[in-house]
Length: 411
Image (cartoon, rainbow, N blue to C red; front, side, top):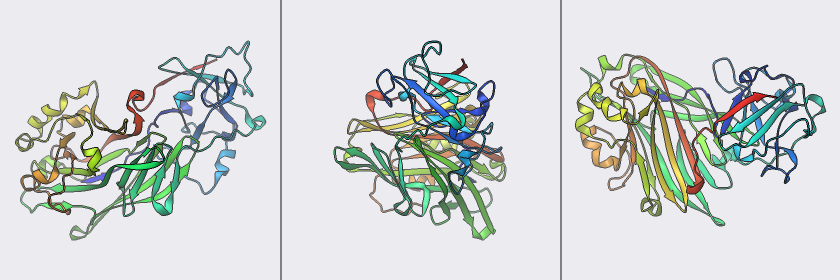
């Protein structure tokens, strides 16, 4: 089994694909403008450009990266993705009385759930440069992402794991969580058990692109099992924004797991909270690990997770409130996967369950680490994508879901 990424489909806080406009948006990329009236990102009561960025996507749903910014001089493609912040939206505009700073053949009105508006048009070559400061910075040499409210440092040896997450505390930084780790365990029928950790799992940065809204990157993923002469490679496109991040995930099963794996085969993701964050309030909206339930097999075990499902999607959340800000892990799994027993359960202390679950952990005894466990013994052969959202340092009173929802209409 492979724990890796799936293609970017949506961005947080909000995204719009070019093919979602009717008629389809056209013209050169650098001519596209998003305007709002009286926006927090512009002048009071004025119609001003607000931050957004264009990110080309290929036919397979993967981000396309370039050596320089010359791609902005090319025409839009139907799979181009526009991402933006709905907080920058403003008042409603009447084009009969209000005049946009520049305007192309088509104008599309975007409306968010709070009744705020923005206006998308392509001014072409007449567009004046619109400068907006980047809200996320990335220092490749330090493996460090930084926004005004959080710092996210990747594990330099494995970018699917983090070294630390810090929240801004006045003029200083306070660590919330650190040292995330991943373990894959396979209890194989008629064979011996296998555990894979960071010694066999590698993930590195392949490419990245910063924009006014966020940083997007491609991570490579390798699972090396030399005994079987297997070198499995995948990649994932990730996105980090001012107060959130999205890491699309995929579990890839090379065989029908029901035929080859015993219950208790799965993925463990764990981390350590700082001593101060360990004492902070937490909210957990997912089942707790129950080893007896796991051992019953995926059909019985699935009933535990289905309580978190509404419609086709099932949402599981772990949050910790620290310094009046929130670190939230939001996991969205399709109901069809939950029915196969694949969903996160909360582990309050992974060392406490290590012996019974057969986890070969490579960190010191006595270290309390919470975690999430995903059972995979009921999954069929193939790739199974799901979404992993991070909300990073958003004030508790300003929390919102990811991604933000907008409606689009042509004026």
